[in-house]
Length: 428
Ligand SMILES: NC(=O)c1ccc[n+]([C@@H]2O[C@H](COP(=O)([O-])OP(=O)(O)OC[C@H]3O[C@@H](n4cnc5c(N)ncnc54)[C@H](O)[C@@H]3O)[C@@H](O)[C@H]2O)c1
Image (cartoon, rainbow, N blue to C red):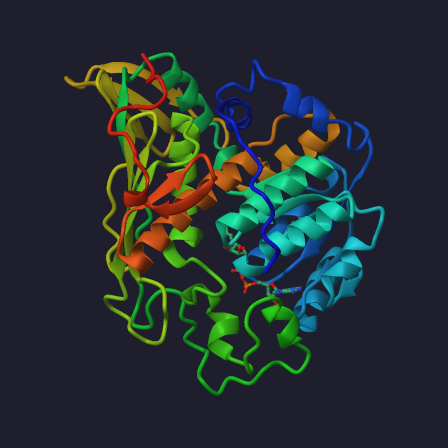
């Protein structure tokens, strides 16, 4: 793992700028990042990790090639067959060592779509090599790693788009403006979910993977493990890594990050004050060490809670909504509607974007060309990592976690003298 650096400070003002709520009025972020490439120049991309999601990035960028004026200059995967296939799709070179892609000096940005335990190292290496980065969610596996990435981003000023692509759905930035303007009155609670129903193997098991599945001859297993403990080839770890805490945070970091980030953006939230995570390996005790059913509640200093439901045994969800004293905001397939206690419409928004990696890449391209604010910048990436890691730590240790804002780290909540009243002025 990366060495743990001193924590960088994030204040509410810089977060507001990044979150989109204040994007129109605070432009320093966009200005300082702008003109990485000239407005009409071709943007040159390298790809690191081309398994499931990495192939999605390859396909998305290929389909944007003409419209966004892109060129592809290298693909790396420690499984050579995968690197070769993606490189053939793009008509570029294949590598098995990601540092070979970082050595290509013409590359403007790299996509990183490897398991979580590699995100921080690859992102900081890419920034050191002068590259901008589109890194898949969660931005990092741990909170200290997120702090290291943020510190590196501040030092190098390299743009970082975190792969929570729902941030390119304008519903959440629009909700933030409406909430800041008082449409809901004082906001006190939000609920959201990520539910699925898995067949008999349970979440993230590959029916074709058995204990005896051999290692592909051209896969570099040691490279895949990286900084994780060295172990002999384990097909379950390679193909089903989301079930193991050493590489993943499971439901919280893989799925909840998509959802909680929406509420954070809509309610302009940064770090939670207290977090509880509950659940268990209820249904599939098959050697996994992360829960197959999980829920979390985060309490934020502005005086509100966010509940996230996450069963993997039943796909009946709950409405995605934000509750205020004056009204309730309901997120729908088309955007959102705010209604008062009697159901009277207070305001609504029809979305123009969507949860779409094409839009998320184009946002990064526009950022590199003309400084358009990033839809999911490092501050938002880090705030998500903090919330879901606190939930997992709460679950793991059977205690409520608290955020020590002075020392910028999570600690058992009972060791902090945390308030029960809002610490920042609530909205109207
Ligand atoms: N945004 C989304 O909707 C979404 C959806 C799926 C996955 N993801 C994210 O994408 C990332 C990858 O997930 P996946 O499902 O594609 O996993 P995967 O296992 O299918 O693919 C990961 C690839 O990275 C390669 N890799 C690992 N270590 C490497 C190294 N050191 N050097 C080069 N290549 C290396 C592996 O060989 C593999 O091909 C995760 O962060 C995941 O959370 C995001």
